Image (cartoon, rainbow, N blue to C red):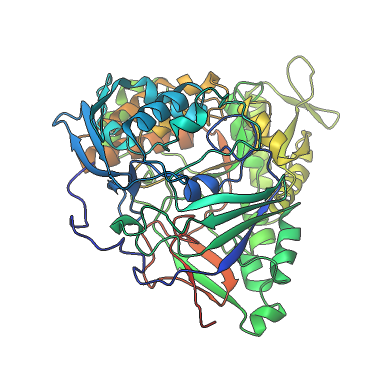
Length: 572
């Protein structure tokens, strides 16, 4: 996107992979909930989240050491117009699907058309910006864009490629569980028990094993995904030796719950990894499509009533810092206090419509850490009064006398989110607000998110060091009314839309950083989400036989780290 790639044309492997890692062995990973689909590319159903990373490939792949660089994967070469109005990919002659058939330009064109029409809505935006898809040679495809957008040449290389022969004549969007999409990736789904287990087996004839981008990756022969009712049951399964590795996101649990016999015997190892990726946003999102969440004063009150310091101390021992903006823990985060000159200039055209504090400076309330949170409750009461609410006989009511009540949508599998909600509900009672938990299974949770059928819901949006067009899908105005989009809060803001345009059209790193910091200010001051804590350190407990390279990528852990570049020590 900017500058030149860090790796030379003849690089041996990604810098955080071990090209000499041994192949073999098997592991079991745990998921909570269940699944009713093995097609992760459509809106219908709930599929195991790991599948796209293991079974399918894209024309280009990301190095998790570089925010703005992609390298050839299915494509052996890429040609780009000087003005980035088109990009042309030439496929590797050895690229094959799992059944041994070659990946062809016809498959590429078919995949982009199919995903752009019948696939999950997250794929539609890119296809709408491609004017023509044309085969230009025996192994080449050119994509010409109808939008001036410098990021499109990179995004065009990041869509999964499907087999045209598999899906012709079939209903892709409504395919049954047994119709498993075939990819070109290192693994295939070789067995499954509906809702309970999926077995992924490494393809011994995988076409890309000698491609530099793939050397030292996907080293484990078999990966099983077992599904558990909730996080507590999953953890007990790990302690019993039924799971090979587990990610721990709670610092207090990490310090106090990982002293079981297998750890004491050295059979289970605790490993930590530092990263430099943005915090993203985790918290309770408020659906502004519904009253009273369409009133920013009500959202301000609900944020003030959330006693973060007390909840954090209770559940994590106070070890994890709060998310203070959407890009916390990174150079892209808004800077504290008033906006700097460049950011302020970018925000100036929208100053009359921006949320209070966007330019002047906005910060989350900080409590004294006590359970009562008197200052927060007073601030919440003031904001509710400004919004026309009054406390009557212990109940907060609006001007029409209707009580302020809402439900918090949660997935049954998350005990930690349930505990957060319960502590929050206790605080809301002091304001005369009746909040309840609406706990549903994973399939219902996804379906209701897709239809924006909630008042408040648990929310997690991971963000990268190279945000771009996906931001429209996360909080752009057009996505606010698009079922299945990730704009769960329903944000509709000309400032947000314009700042995303500035971000993706930036001609320099400085312009890009300024636009992202300005966007961060508008999102944070918009008071759409009640933020929780961030994860500045990755924690993985794993069997001792599981090994990893010495170098940790810039982005730290993720499916492209564990288990992608890990391996089983044959001597363990």
